[in-house]
Picture 1 (tube, helix red, strand yellow):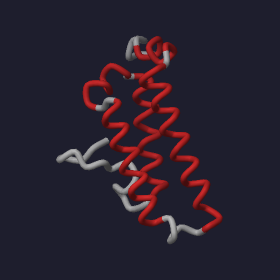
Picture 2: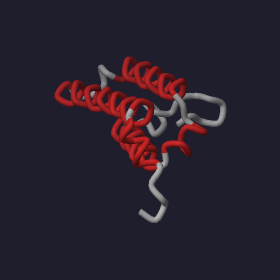
Picture 3: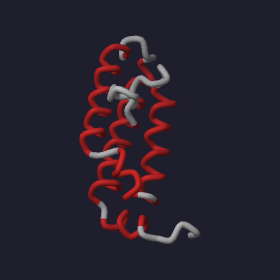
Picture 4: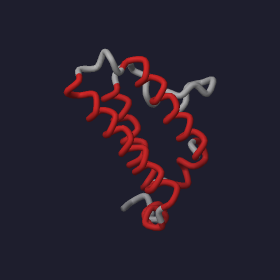
Length: 104
């Protein structure tokens, strides 16, 4: 999930955390099914850069985010990064799913 010159987009691509969170979630869900294909273009370093990009973006805008939503946005994004790491980079279950034939 990087732009053309490697700038992280998971955290500020669309200027809206909800959209970027959805993009990350979709990438994870697709990656569970097509893990090897995803690993060609997106690795652990990319996930770390995306996380750093989110952290930088969040520091810049957190005071502008309504207080009643701030913690939920941060927690949801952190959870998505953890799920991504677990399901794409560490999970034997993800290995099994990614080896299913495309018709399933």
